[in-house]
Length: 125
Image 1 (tube, rainbow, N blue to C red):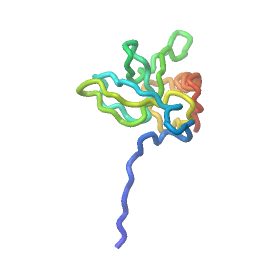
Image 2: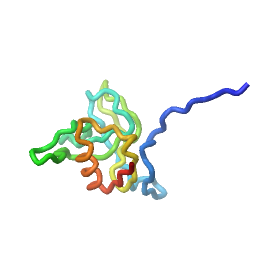
Image 3: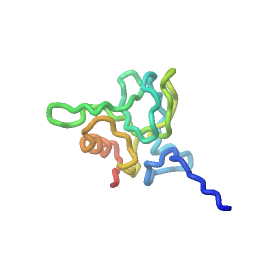
Image 4: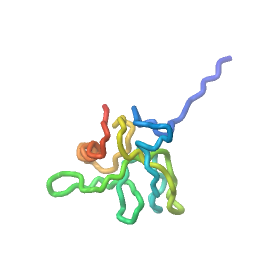
């Protein structure tokens, strides 16, 4: 009898291609995910909170219709910030990512994608 196994989502599944070296530190940065944001899913677009930590973006835009958030990168792996700050990693630069696998809070995807491109991301699909 054949058994069918279903495989769940992998950490960093949104990455199409990343620049890497022997240490794996060109595209990734260490980050502290601020407490109080519940479970932050892999692929969530994150911003700096001004206190040295990252939080999910809110999708806010300025009067010109552009994203006014200080984007930090994209969460690499799922972290649970329910009970406190959590050390984790961000894809922060030099990566090709699949837009369909990103979590972009708010409704201004195009502005967020433009901001990601400024961090040297190529957003595919």
